[in-house]
Length: 113
Length: 114
Image (cartoon, rainbow over all chains, first blue to last red; front, side):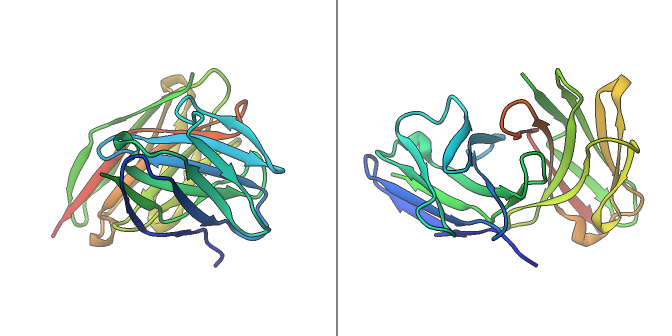
């Protein structure tokens, strides 16, 4: 069964460093998403992406964040200069259509020291 | 803005007993509603969803949920708990007017006692 994959599963970084989280969505999906879950808090929407453009973003998704689909298979989330409060589990999701079910990856746990 | 409230961050049930997880939502438009399950060290897996039509929705692993518009609820049930149901369960509502982003509840962790 097709699934969304994410790498790395865990990442530890120093405050101020750049990190890139990688996702491989399901191959025929066209809509891509990033969510995050800070420990003990709700899963929060960050951004949705379609046709090589951001279609929606939350107030969390400030200038420190960017997304890219560098090739036909990967979807990345970059945090330019990490802060302590960026420590969270980051989930990638994809869907076949704009109102279709979102399928989630296993997440990347990011720890900023 | 949409919101989702899950009553009870932790629920403990005996094996074979009824599982009932409560979810209430607020939405300015007719909602699409979802239940996802997260097993340890895994991603979010779709259990079931409601979009339109029949208000009682059946999902995987014997779970079902009923959409009640008058109560703005979408409670999840399973008649008989199994040890393998131990996981965290998330209710979510889709904002169809905003890129289909999902708004999640806080999650309910289910513990199943033998």
